[in-house]
Amino acid sequence: MNPILTVETLSFHYHDGEPLFENIQFSIFPGTLTALIGPNGSGKSTLLRLLAGIIPARQGKILLNQTSLCSFSIRERAQRIAFLPQNIFPVFPLTVFEIVAMGRYPWKPILSGLSQKDYEITDKCIHLMNLNSLEDRPYSELSGGECKRTLIASILAQEPEILLLDEPLAGLDLPHQIETLHHLCKLTQEGYTVIIASHEINIITRFAQKFILLSSNHQIIAQGDAETTLTKDNLNRAYNASFWVGTHPLTKGLLIEVEQKETR
Ligand SMILES: Nc1ncnc2c1ncn2[C@@H]1O[C@H](COP(=O)(O)OP(=O)(O)O)[C@@H](O)[C@H]1O
Ligand SMILES: [Mg+2]
Image 1 (cartoon, rainbow, N blue to C red):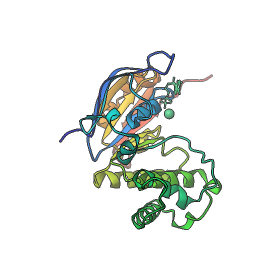
Image 2: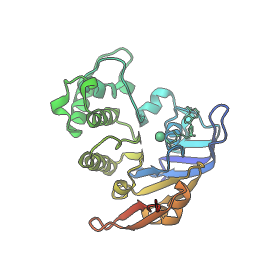
Image 3: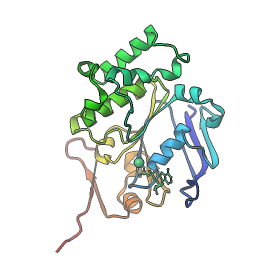
Image 4: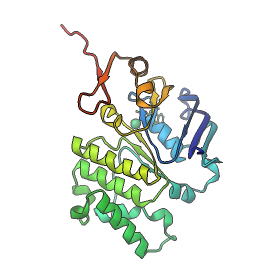
């Protein structure tokens, strides 16, 4: 099977800034859930923006289905890749339904209204994210978790092949975090490819097949499955902290903690 996304010798720096990424590479296969893990400032959001084509790579290549990402038009890219940024504050007073329906924009002829198909897909995504009872509520009056679920429904309505989500679990309570990951896993089983940046290591290890571990100096310390990537040594190097890695008594997956420093 060919990768759906390939990153080859990618280097990047913000305008006058220090080099952020130097020669990083990885491949993402269709129908998988990948977690980008790393400390604050390690470059997770930047990497997602590069993969979404929102900021261009300075050197190296990002290939979508073997074709350079920059050869797709913005509309073509939006039909294939949906990106959910960390924070969104809509300027207009939109309802939950209207926000979700906005996901249909890349598929609509310019200035046309919603088609029957657009309505059907919007309804399906509202239902999928348990938003039926909220669909007429103004987005500005939702709780943080309800906002997140609305935004996820909106990018699902975009019907992309690839979903890039920047900290989609932040602000959700534990049951909603798990429910969101269940939804995303279900999507991967239907063939969608999902990449998530998240700090919720202990939850995500139960769901993701692949992990990319970034360090505070923006290097990929390790990539692969949870057991080989999220080792004590790799986590210590990535976060410059002292980790403890054990087995979760209930799930039998990894259980990751930071060792307490003695304070006197
Ligand atoms: N728009 C920007 N312009 C300049 N520097 C930025 C910008 N966005 C992020 N950075 C810098 O790039 C580095 C990585 O940031 P980011 O990708 O947001 O990391 P993370 O998502 O892992 O917290 C940080 O040092 C941050 O200050
Ligand atoms: Mg970030």
